[in-house]
Length: 194
Image (cartoon, rainbow, N blue to C red; front, side):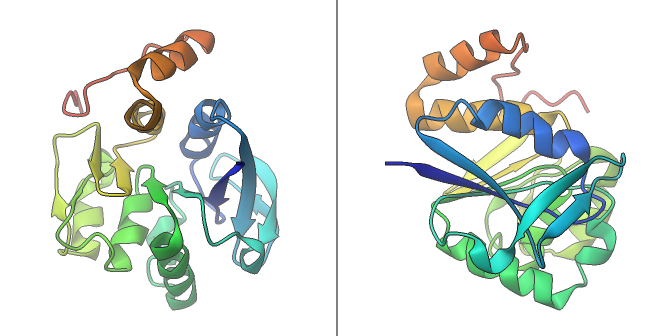
């Protein structure tokens, strides 16, 4: 059975937040990677990288939802329509993974209330000011609480994605992927140097 891996994007997303996990999750068994935004069309990262997206109403209800962070989250966190759509698809997803300040957007939905979560340490004070519902963990490379995974800043999304694959398929699979892309995986979610 094909696994839908759905990336929800917005203008001002962080490039590595998206493409780091894309590189890793593309190794998923029988997968289909798709990219969505509220209205579809061309979406541009903070660094000026553009990607064509499908409109949100084309997103499958099931599968894995992945949400990057980036400077665009600073205004998007107050965008009620986006937060409502995010809540709907995060509730129906089998798993929901956020990278960097993407956790601020997910926290705004209330779905992280009472759950362990983390975010980019450079933006940690801002993220935690958005919602006091989650149990925010400052010293964490990534967290996993039920179906929700959150990672620290930028490159931590790659460690979290490998950790997610390890949880689902075993550490050997994650190590094989890390070796294939010549990436030194930080396997300990609590080992956070930042």
